[in-house]
Image (cartoon, rainbow over the protein chains, first blue to last red):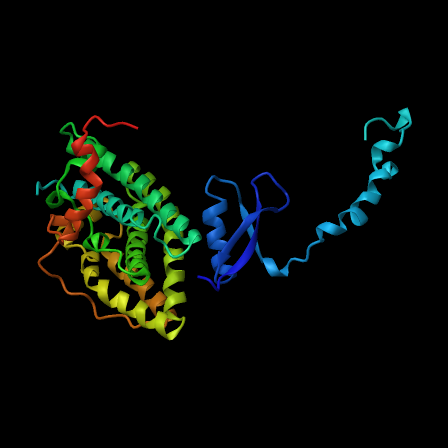
Length: 93
Length: 253
């Protein structure tokens, strides 16, 4: 099984709208990855839908880019809706 | 063995077959070819233990001699077990494990499909729940048969050898009609007489897709799981499975 591919597994829960990453499985191909994911990640009624993606198909940010990529957003509070004061007439949004 | 009525024997056949198949699968803990496969095999085994419990609880009530489902599993000898011979065979290599699982699943699927429509509400309920589980079991084992059969030269040759090795025991899938006619007529086991035919269609389709050759129809022989006439393998399985409750009757967990 040394030549099996690693797949990342995404599961949508009963009440969830989006698929969430839950872990990974080894399998010979995507079909088998779905079955293995079903066995490993939906044993306790966690899901109603499964996606699998070969791990190599995922492009990720590098950890040493973290500061350059994400820190600049930390002081831009005005990008949050809560930054703005709503006039009373607007009521609940 | 003690003879019971046909319905009770059917329940014992279903319960015992599920139980022995589960016990064989449990032997693979720590020994499956991949972690993912091991979890999958154990999940199938656990489904089967649950099904065995449901069938044997009903059987125990019908036998009505004070024994529980646990007593039936842990305190009967091999000559009183009614499981299919197929499920007691050793696991062999992974090809044999899959060949056994596939032949069992395809028979099980056809059986439960019929029993889901039983006029006996309890049987219909257990069969309907089990049918969902077995639909997945069959899908999984069929995928493996196709994958190995239509894989490399070596996997093809070994999958074919595995099918050939265990095929003989499929003769038990066509049950003697004298046991079924009444159950079928009463509606307890609808379409019982077509189980073998439906099983055969499933197997034919999967083996053909797997580029494997289907052996000739298996001939009946002197052994019969249903009548308690087993291969020598069952005794070893029961010895391991029953040792603890027999040695320590009050054991609890």
